[in-house]
Amino acid sequence: MNGKCRRSPLLMFVIVFSHLLPGTLIPARGEGVGVDPPPIWYTVVIRGVSDSGLRKLLRSVSTVAADEDEPSPSEYLLGVIAADDAGKMEKVLRSRSYYSGTVRSRLESEDDKLRVVFIVDKGTAFPISSVSIGLTSPAFVGFALPDGSELGLGKGDPAAARAIIAAGAKLLDYFQKRGYPYAEIAARRVVVDFARQAVDITFTVAPGELVAFGETSISGLKDVEEAYIRRLIPWEKGRMYNSALIQQFRNRLGRTGLFTTVAVSLGEKDSSPKTPPSPVSLPILVKVRERFQHTFGLTGGYSSDLGFGGSVSWEDRNLFGRGEFFRLKLFGSEQLYTAEGRFRLGTFLHPDQSLELAAQPVYEDTDAYKSYRIRGSAVIEREFAESFTVSAGLALTQDSVEQLEQGKDFTLLSLPLNAQVRVGGEQPFRRAGALISLLGEPYYDLHDERFFFKILFTTNLLYHFPGASFLSAVGRVSFGSIPEASPGEVPADLRFYAGGSNSVRGYAYQSVGPLAGKDPVGGRSLFACSLEFDLEIIGDFGAAFFIDGGSSFADDLPDRWKDVLWGTGGGLRYFTPIGPIGLDIGFPLNKRKGIDDDFQVYVSIAQIF
Image (cartoon, rainbow, N blue to C red):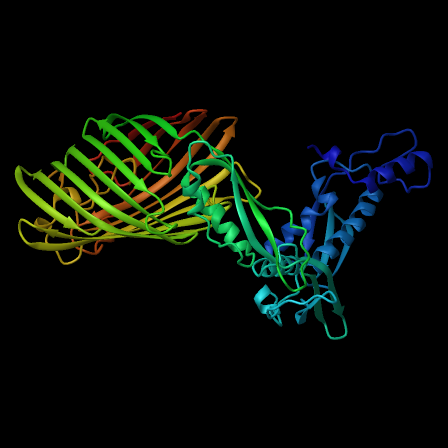
């Protein structure tokens, strides 16, 4: 939207009024009869505010700031609009609890440069003195009402408008979790006492009817069995309505991956009379739409370190009609061949628990080692909260490894343990978020009767820049350790390596870490980090810029930080309906003579349909 389209109604009124009543406005500098006035260019300055966030908010309500890239017809009109903007800014101050704050506007000219100056005096933020919560008469509820601190309005906190509005939403949620789905804020009163410089807040709630869960009806099912869906319902008929249980049910249905839409609502109440506070039993209506249950996937790529590679996969998310998940995947490249079969049984002994059985044969022939292993595992995963998941299981691995022309066989019994925490929301983390994972796996070698333990901590971060939806940042930090074990006790293909497309870009695969000559041998600890900026350019085209750093280390803790190598680079992205196509080039910033190339190239193609 250009500057002309953004002009306020007040400005347009003044301009039209000046044409209807000529001579009523004072001519600006340089204006004369029959002479077009020169354009009035200006800049906007806000004084008295050190908080960058508040300053940005004040600018956002200013018309003269929004039209700063367009000239004004005259200084007089500019002053009129600036005075109007000052009033808007005072409302912003009041919304931030600065109820005595003032904003003055004036025009300043220096060296033929005109400035619109807003002088802000915030005053003192008025604190909350009291928070009262009442009910509409003759309403009655059978539980204690929350206090202000439970709603985020603690005594002494600034009485900001955003916090007061959020407290109202929390108050309704408080009632909806205790049997009152139709609760409403009947009145919200905010009294500002300028003598005490304090704020008193009163909420009055109309609870509505007390409701209990009635019969649950489910519609829209085709291939999914209704009995499976009913096992996911967290409430019982006759229990008091609780909005948290409704959300928990929605989350369980969403995690199955079986539906494109899920709607859960209250039905109509029955006509039988009830005596308050006796609950009204209402039916729960569940409407779903099933998604296509099969996915066929193809991926392809090329990198300087691994050569050409690709995969083909097939998955069925509803194998026997009760949400059973099965996936078969084959992957091949010049250095790695693997097959993977996974079967997951949902609602295993608990609605929030699953059992996954997996088998994976792998053949690797890299510069670090040559290995053939086959691993079978059974893992139980339990979600204890929407963002907290824990898994534990049992695995058996038969491994044959050759490194530096020496081969050895291992038969490993292990207990894979994993805890995962998500901070932020879905898609994938709204504006910002993190995915934190802690993997620990104790191994026991049945051949040599030796024990070792491997631990890996990883944090993935995502941030979408506010006001710049085209720009996002992705970060990753990893730390690993295999304590109290000699390198010979740990199979070469289970040690830590760094370098390559999923690690430190710009360096060859597995090459960053301990070396025997030019051959990588892996380490007992790992540190790696990455920061990437993704930029949407035009339509489906985008670009990425990254810097990576890391290394593996011979000891069980990183001890030689000077061995950390850094790489940087960038690439292009093209987003297609069947997946993204990417081209990246990475450059080593700590190039080692005779070991590292000048650059590495990475091409990726993903197709899912």
